[in-house]
Every structure is written in C-alpha cells, then in structure tokens.
Length: 363
Image 1 (cartoon, helix red, strand yellow):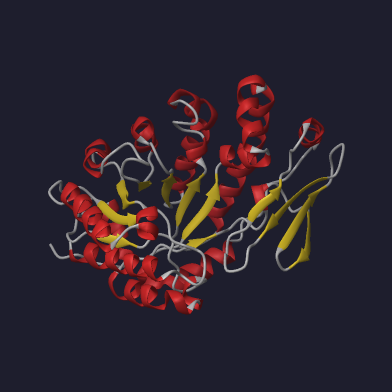
Image 2: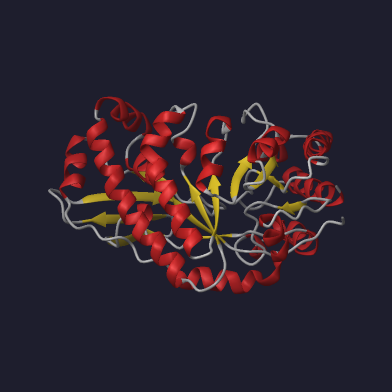
C-alpha cells in the first residue's frame, strides 16, 4: 500500500489502517508559523508541505502554569514578568528570550524559598485560565488538510515541578510529600476545568497533547510513584477527550517501557516520541508489539542525531527504525523527537532533517 500524507492519514491510523511507506511527521515543524517565516527553514517547510503530514503546535494556555491571569509586565523585548497577588506576599516569575530563539526560559521561579511556598498555598479560589480556543481554531484553518494542530498543555506534575528550583522540588517530594500533593491536586483541578472547556468549546478537530510526564517517570520516579502523582489526572483527561471525540497524545521523552501499558490502557491515541536507546529504553518493534493496536507508536529518530550526526548516521538510524517497523503491520508514525526553534538553522541540521524526511517518505 502506498504511503499517504495529510489529515486523513491520522484518522486512518487511529482506525488501524496501516500504510507503507509510513506516515512521516517532521515533529513540531510549523510552515504556517514561526518556521515558515524564517528563510533558513524554507527548504524544510517546502519539502514537508509536499511530502509529509503536519502536526504543528499551538498553545491554548495564555498564561504560564495555568494559574490564572495575574498581572503581566513586559520590562523589555527580551524579558517578561508575571505577578500573582492574593497570598501572604506578592509572588512572581520571570522568563527571558534569547536572540534567535523562539523559546522562553524561566529565570525566576514562583517558589524559591519556604515563604514563597506558604504564600502560594495561602491563595484562595485561584480560578483556572480560560482556554484560547481562537488560537486553536486559527491554526486548524491554517493547516487544513495537511494535518492537525497539536494543542499543547503541561500536566500538573510538569507545572508544579517548574514552580520550584529542580533540586528543591525533588527533595520536597520525599520530605514534604503532603504539601506537594496538595499543590498537585489544586493544579490538577484547575487543569481539568481548563481542558474540559477547551474540548467542549473549540469546535474544530485537534490533538490534545499533554507534556511534562518525563519529569515524573523513570529515571526520576518509579512507575508506582508516577501513577500515584499523575495517574488520576491522565485517566480523567482521556475520558474527557474521548467524550468530545478529541484525539490525545501522551508526550514523554526517554525511558517509557515501564509506563507504556498504563498509558495505552487509559485510552491515549499516541505516545510520543519513542526515542531509541540510549536516551530511550524501548525499540520501535517492542513498542509496536506492546501497543497491541491500542494506539499509534510515534517517533524513532533522536533529534540530537539530526543536530550532530553525519548523513551516514542519519541513513543508518532511519533504516534501522524502518526495518523494525516495516513488517509488523502496526500503525506507525516516523518522526524525530523535536524540531529546532532557533534561527538561522545550521546547515548540517537542515540537510539532516531533509534527509530524514526524504528517506522516511520513501520507506
């Protein structure tokens, strides 16, 4: 069966219809947004529009950490600050954006000491953010039959872990578990309300993509700890999305072997990105076998290889991945684990991305 591209291929895979060459998704690439506006990405965007299925990301959460509007103060083009009143003290966070990089990076966190923690827990009736359904609708119209928008939401564990300095958070999981759990439960309920509104009100097809689980699974925490901190949230979200016929993607880098069966059993349509060893701990063949037709295995190519490897390295990695998947007869999307968001794109990365897409679409 010849390979196909576009939105319908996603629905075909969900229904268990398998095509070869595989569906190829240049993960995160957005010819209609940031990437398409950069000359250094022109060749990649042109190839993807002709040969690939597209799942560009869109962010329906307008405010960091999904904790309400607060007060947003832009002190310069390179920094933005968020303030949250209502507790025992004024809380704030700040982010910086480096030239040539579209991503924002936290430089001051909400909870940097014990007083901040107590102040955050003292805030009453912190309402959930309202979803930006218009942003999802606009992106869906841009993509059209090329694919679907990925509406990206950070899960409670990812949100709360980012409120603290990393080492502080993981220490408090062990010695301050009750208060961490309280913060997770408060965050979970706001997120559930947000996701319900997003699924109910958006009115166009999209894929709900949950990120943050890589902070809560091995090697950071055991499978049992992951399920105790996050299991109820993921079960409820899967049920909400299914009720509104919204597709779901569970995003987790690295070792996912121990939690795959749990996620498929909850009803998620995708687990992504499956990274090969050494960053991951499961091969594509093993992942396809474990899925048992319950969802779409998505990934196979480590994005670090595209940034640092030779063309021969890329050829070997794609060939190895396709050889794993080709004869299984299981739904599979070939993708890299991330797309760069910096400009200009180095020539090596550009050529490796083009090679990966070209080899994948040829099967």
